[in-house]
Length: 185
Image (cartoon, rainbow, N blue to C red; front, side):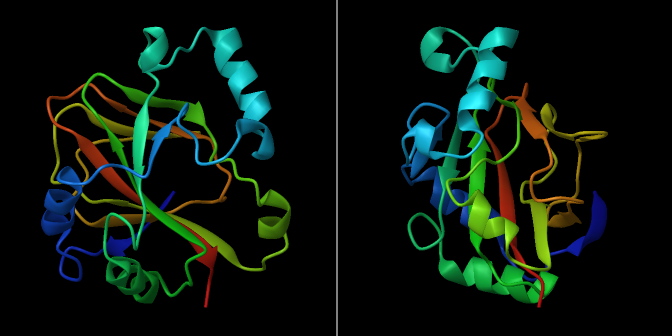
């Protein structure tokens, strides 16, 4: 991933997080899906890989669980608009993920029911933003690196929208992270 810059002076991430703490997530993964898993391109294969590896959801006695918050539902669309201007891209999708202490978003790529349409969009870019003040035990991993103790507001561009990644929280506080993809302007 490539470091792009910091949104700390542009977006009050502490305020966003405080509002999210009072909100019910729009989606809890991987089980409480917005869509039928069979409608999501790649999800059946991903679920088979998890099963073969012995990965279990929290409901099954494991640790695979995350929450998702969406703009216009749990946080203001203005956050996405400011982020779009910062990275000079238009949003197709944006969300904030939360992982509670002791849980993880197991190794995955962000599957969708719109993969065929996404593949047709030129200049697609993907970013993540570390929106929390650095906390012990908050880790984000990509295919070749692990990220922890990141400065609040740090933005990274991914080499591919479908890059494999995961996150874990072996800390004592909830871990929040902003995700975004869309065409570059």
